[in-house]
Amino acid sequence: MSKHFELLKRVANADLFRLPDESAPPMRTAATGLVFKKPPTDAEITKLVQRLFSPADKGDEPRMVSFSGITREDRSSWICARAGEALVEQSDASICLVEANFFSPQLHVHLSTANPIGLAEALTAKAPIRNFAMPLASENLYLIPSGSVKPGFCVSVERYRERFAELREAFDYVLISAPPIRCEVEAGLIGRLADGVVLVVEANHNRRDTVRRAKEQMESAQVRLLGAVLDQRTFPIPEGLYRRL
Image 1 (cartoon, rainbow, N blue to C red):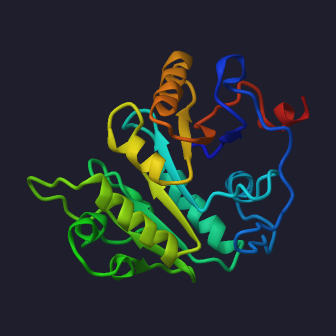
Image 2 (cartoon, rainbow, N blue to C red; image 1 turned 90 degrees about the horizontal axis):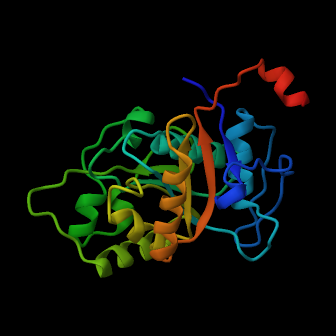
């Protein structure tokens, strides 16, 4: 399972798979004073986190980010989990990972924990949202798994909005594993409630036209595209030589 992926600056026309210029240096965010404290344990994951939460344009730092693939056979939840671990490792901020993909929940699997109750129950109950967040091994890192979706489960947009606003108040950063863009209507809803979406594109699997249509779908739903991750990339030549080109 390859760990190679890149954060793309944008997904549009001829620039669909343009690489970022260079890795961003550690920065401080204006919103919470986030400072990356130590060298990365996974350079690519940390580069992703730095680009997301320490952007060049100050005052525009996202605090709630949705990770969504194009189809159901992607690793968006895996990338979401690893990004949360990297963010909490590099900062003192409180981070909550939220599983919003009720149809194929994987966050709890990638984090080696259970899925007793979670977002499904939080959307239908009155208890504070923190009651559904379980602490993980890393300090200041929490998980709200999907929980159990019962027959007839249907939640209003307003209820989603209320709970997501509560998440913003409870945690410094919220990373959401969302349904795939092309399969579920909920992906657009979650993207609008968040500060934007990171689109996960699987190399050698998702066609360029498919990615472009997914981008257009997000635009029509008024969802902000924060960037795209090219996952499962393979190198036709040794990676060491590739990086020198």
